[in-house]
Image (cartoon, rainbow, N blue to C red; front, side):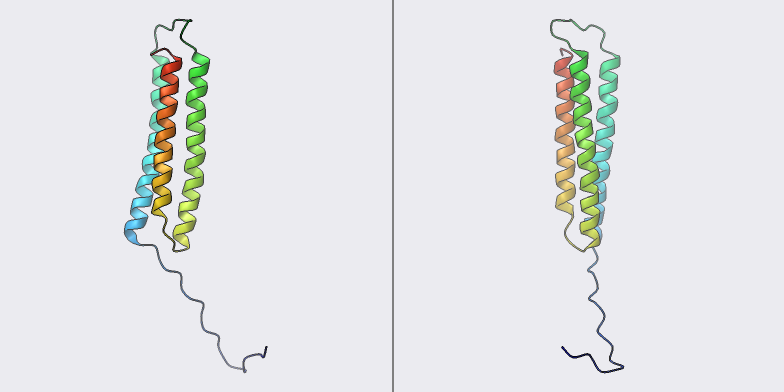
Length: 125
C-alpha cells in the first residue's frame, strides 16, 4: 500500500444521517408515557395498600402483595432505563429507534398491569 502524495487531503468521513423529527418526538413521548405509567402504578399500589381496611387472613397476604408490585415496578424500571439507552444510541447512530420505544412502552404497561393485578389478588379483591 502506497502513501498518498504530500498535500493530498483525504475525503471527510460520511456524515451521520440525522434522525427524523417525528421519530424523535414519538420516541420521547412513548418513553415519557412509560415513565409516568410506572410512577402512577407505584402510587396506585401505595394507595391500594393504604386504604385496604379489611384483610381476611385466609385469602389476604400483604407480603405477597408488596412483592408482586415491587417486582413488577422494578423490572419495568429496568426495562425503561435499558430501553431508553438503546433508543438514544440508535437515534444518535441514525437508525430507526421508534420500534424500540414502542416495545418499551408496551412492556412497561404489561408489567405494571401485572403488578397491580398481582397486588389486588394477593389482597383478596
